[in-house]
Each structure stands twice: as structure tokens, then as C-alpha cells.
Length: 319
Image 1 (cartoon, rainbow, N blue to C red):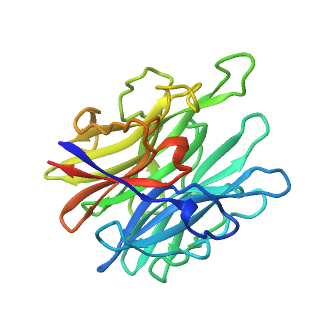
Image 2 (cartoon, helix red, strand yellow):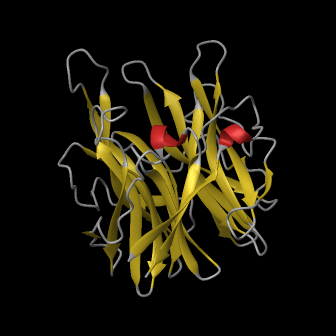
């Protein structure tokens, strides 16, 4: 298999976004319509009180050529959580799927902490207006920290296979100071849970389903799973857990694994391999992948340098 890169297709700095959001179009996630494609993404506003970011969900509607923009949402599709709730300070990402006449949105809610910078959990919101707005089932999460997954549960991607809801998500193995003069950094791995209704979930507690490539301090994020032929393929991003923000070669890149039984995964990052382009928007980093099918073709949406500050691009799979 081979990825044919088609370039950057959305730049948030060229559009008016809601709630004072500027820059950032992180973690693009697709909802298919008969005549167009809706792509949800996480953008950011600055909190006036402390200058910190708040992550909001917006979307862009595009023609199925995935080039021509129809419109960009003028309002956030879901407000942030209430005071003290798991999603008080941001939602990033939100993964969407159709379920009957409704659209389920699995949110990754962020809340700030004191000893470390942040914690996360997965919530569920439901849309009854074809994805224009979403309402939470309740103020709390549907998947969160547990006995052997102590922190940072998030990045949920849900898919119904043979009548069973499957969710691939990340869980934190812990925080660590990698150097005495820096703040703690986190490490997280990809896990798996199942459900009969998409609300009550049973985890495979603390089972890291994708083998490490960089060693135990490899962080894995944002799994997305698609069936190609009789095999299921997972795309995700991975990086070093420390000194990854600016150091060359330690930032996110796209990983790949496959399975024939949804239990045992074989890692194969080189087939297909997505590489950065010299001096381009994705030269230093490729992250936050989302794979989907449109009109019989398989596409990859992904972010580039600076964690998607300047938008997202597209690649087409050649099998």
C-alpha cells in the first residue's frame, strides 16, 4: 500500500471561526453525507483571565472532491463542560459516527490539574439535527480512569462491527519528570473496549494493543480503524514522550497496524508510510490521523507541524 499526498486542504487562518478561535484545526474527523463531507476539528480560543487555551469543536463542509469548501461553522457545535467537569477546559478531539437517525459524538474532554498540566476522559454527546449541534447524555464521561488506567483516557474512536461497538482509545501509563528542570510529561498507549449500546463500556484493562517501536516511553495517540478487504487497519500517531515539541525527529509521525481478528495487532509503519515533505507544512510532524472512505476511495486526513496550528491535509491510499 502507498499514500499519495494531496497537500493541505484547510487552513483555519483563512476563515472566521467561532468564539474568538484563531488558528488550529486539529484532529479532523469525517461525517459523510450523500452530497458532501463534513469535517469536524478542534480549534482554540484564548481564555482572557490567564491566557491559556480553550479547545472548541467546529466543522467545515466540503464537496466530495475534498477541495472546494461549502461553509465553515459559525458557532461551536457543543459548549464546554460545567465548572469542575471533565471537559471544562476543552474538547479535543470529537469522533463522530452515525447511529440510526442520530449522530454520536465521542468527545475527549480536557481539564487542568495542579501537579500536572491536564487530565482527560471520554464523553458522549448526541446530535438529532444531523451533526449541527450536540447535547451531552450527562455531565460526566462514559470512559475514564480506572484501577490500572490511572489517567489520560481519551481519543476514543468508535465503530460498530458485527453488531458490537468497539472503541479504540488511549490511556495514560503515568507522568514522569524526564529532566530535573522541566515539567512532567505524559506517556500513553492505545487500548480497546467494547459495548452493546455505545454507552456502557467494558475495557480490556491496561492492555497495550499496539507494540512499541520507540520503547516504553513511546506515546501513541488518536487511533482510527478501517476495514480494507477482510483485514482491519489502524492508523495512529506516535512520538517520544519527552522533548517532542521542538526537537527534530522526536515529534509525531503516523503509525500503522493491522489485524485479522480484532485482538492481535501487527505493527507495520512502513506499509503504507506517510513521510513529511521538505520545507512544507508537514515537514517536521505528521499527526492526528483520520482514515475514511469516500466514493470508493480511502483517504487520510492528518495534521502537520505545530500540532495542526495551520490546518490539515489529505492523502489517498493506493492499494
